[in-house]
Image (cartoon, rainbow, N blue to C red; front, side):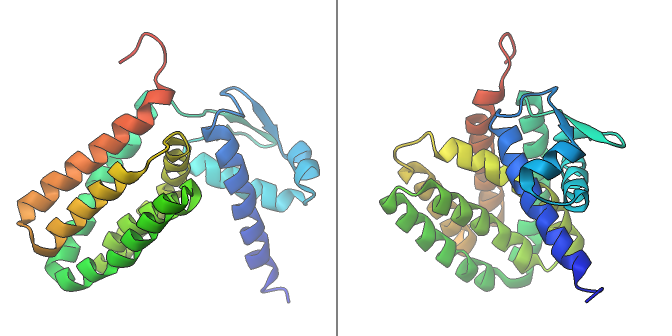
Length: 222
C-alpha cells in the first residue's frame, strides 16, 4: 500500500491544480491573490500534500510564485500568451517535421478521429468537448513523432493552453471556422508539400494566439 499512496496523492494534486489553473486563467483569482496551503486544504477537504503538489505544478507553469507556506497568483497577460505560442510554435513545428518524416500516413490517419469529434462537438454546441478534441488533434503530432522529451515539454504547457482555448471557445456561438481551419491543416498533412504544411501550421497557431490574447491584453498595450 505504501507504494500506491504517492500515486493517489499526485492524482489529487493534479485535480487541485486543474481547478486552481481554471480559476487563475479565467481571472477569478486575480494577480496578487495569495494562495495559502492551509486555507486551500480546508477548501478542498484535503491534506496539505496534494495542495503542495498542485502549487509546485502551477509554479512550473509560471502561473504562480511560491514560497514556503503560500503562493501568489501571477496570472497571464498578452505577453505571456505570446510567449506560450512562440514556444508552442517551435515545439509543434518540430513534432510535425519529425512525424511527417517518420510516418506521414499514420499521422494523417491519427488526425481523423479528433476531427470527427470536433465536428460533433460543434453540432452539439459543446465547447468542452470541442476543446478536448482540438488539443487531442495537436497532440497527435507529438505522439506520432515518438520524441519523449518533446512530448514532455508539450505536456507541461498543454493544460494551460487547454484552459485558454476553452475560455475562448465558450465565447463563440459557431465553432465552424475552427473546424474548417483544422480540416485544411489535416488535408495538407495528408498530401500537401512540406513547406505548405509548415506555413499553414504557422498561420493556424498565430490566429489562435491572436484570438486567445485579446482578453489578456492590458489597456494601452498592443
